[in-house]
Length: 111
Image (cartoon, helix red, strand yellow):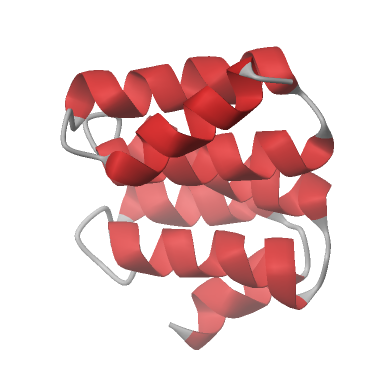
């Protein structure tokens, strides 16, 4: 986990992705990638890195409504309403009971 955190914190997402490909069942669980994205987004206020981490999470766990919801949140923080909306829509397609995605999508559409 420390290696994963160090790679994410250093912004070396290419190495992080290569490490993930080499050991998909290792420390790169959906929960870990999501936590790293939120650490970048809110802990470090590095929206660009958070978006990249959440994009990596969606490529790694494409059937997870949760990671698409997280990506939507980061994209909304970046101000990309169209991309955030698309991400929340994907989240809802995968997890129709995701109330957060539904609320955030309504909020974005009301802008």
